Image (cartoon, rainbow, N blue to C red; front, side, top):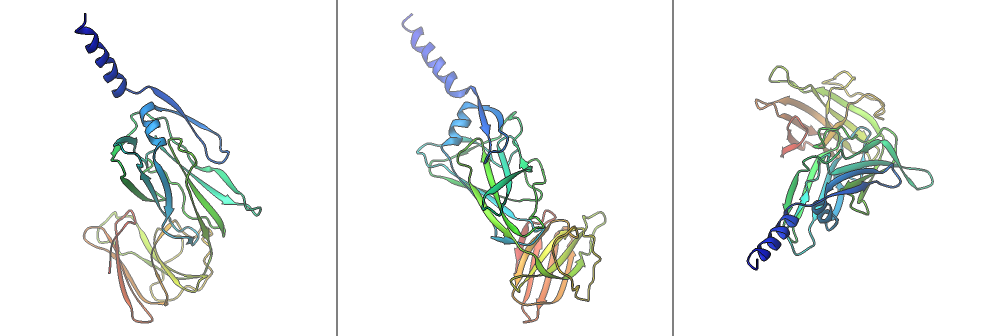
Length: 291
């Protein structure tokens, strides 16, 4: 009996350590309707120890421009921990909010990406003191390819808030939307292979008197290779979301774009100061190289 008792105690301890119980977690931001999800208690507890932040690639966007969102997770403890992997619909929620004239930010439930039930929650190990970063484009992200949203048409101040397995307070990042003074140019991306997704390159003069160069999915506007399109740019249904690839201080003199043999988008331009630039993107609008 004396030899069996210690073994029994060790077995119980090991089982309790490896198998956590299910724990309900309430997910909510700024008064949104709470979402209750059930998670492994160890993952929920480990997530509470993480330091979280969310950031955007710029502070001011044009209407329909696609923000790049970066989520940063740091483990401030002295232990390596298993944590839920972010950017997954079972662990992550994103809430888009707009600023009222009173200065208060109000949630908009139609832009609330709610975490789903956590069946087989994906996990990753984060070492003591380690920081991880995860970046994605907001119009088509890795949250089960759910379209979150691009920047709205209406000039205002907005906010993205992050819900990560009930961590509180939810970190957030603010941004502003401004109209462009004119849509300068729209050109087709010439396809090298049949069936490639249709793209267009746009040049927009901003209210800051510089020029944004972006790549968009198909637009309702016709392409014009040679003439400036002089009209205000307000989003206003003319564009599918576009990714800004550069900002030029000078007007664009020459602009060319095509798909290479790898179906990557190659955009080249020369501004009026004779500065030349080239950017290569993949079909998901991720920038691969710049020169």
